[in-house]
Image 1: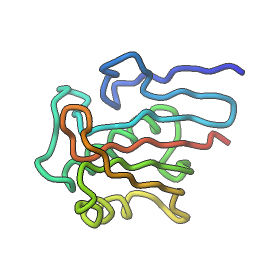
Image 2 (image 1 turned 60 degrees about the vertical axis):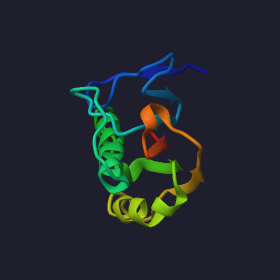
Image 3 (image 1 turned 120 degrees about the vertical axis):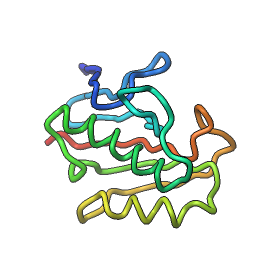
Length: 127
């Protein structure tokens, strides 16, 4: 199976030994995106709503760089620092995916990179 790394300035540069996304036949796996501004590399937002907007903008930028859209996302995993932020995150998230919404898991974690409040990864269909 051939895998191809995706790298674009439409999303933050990888800050470790990973790819922004990996394509395999029929699928693309987008690494967890935190609220880093791709232009500055700095964290954006002081609350989970602002951070969720930036995270989803990063995912969308990576997708669009490959000729894809949010409609192509089939599964996401949302990592929240505090599950009490679920409703606020969900309010932003719900407006970004056309129906049918992707399958999703949401998990509270002890800590995220750079102390982000939210991180989201995505699985995308390429067909």
